[in-house]
Length: 192
Image (cartoon, rainbow, N blue to C red; front, side, top):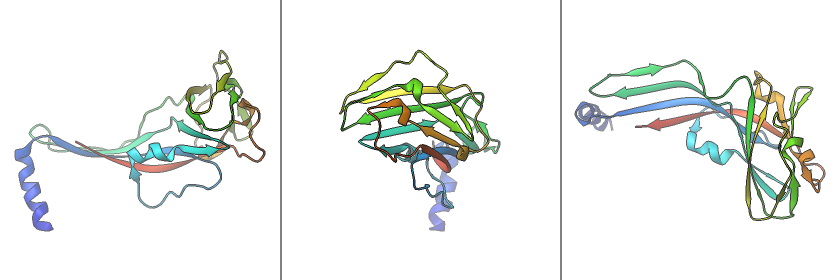
């Protein structure tokens, strides 16, 4: 095994190109059971699959724009031997909270009014900044996408935030459907 690593390391300067590893954190939604953070990071491509929640007869993809790249290690051959960045780089607007929703309804036809979505931060309740939203009839079997922006800075802890979609649906969701909460998890991404 070590011999293979030595041969690979010796061949790299002749191969050219680059490779790297990025690490960071991002929030994933959950309803009741807190996702386990674990001691290791997950591949970044797996974040997509962890952003789904099943609510009543719908599957909802929820993306909170709060992703941070905490480190970037790159080796570029022939040009720059090694590049290391250990500073946090935020890939979101810290002055506002943006949440994208993709809703796939498979059961009852419902009306969804994005202007009635509630984002609870501590004791404060916020509504989306855009008031020109209109109600949409969610037909079973179709996907619907919404981008919600709240005029409020991102809180220090995502655990303070709860996204309540229940007021936006008509007919109402079944009783006991909880608000969506968020948990930060670590991710990693290899690139070349």
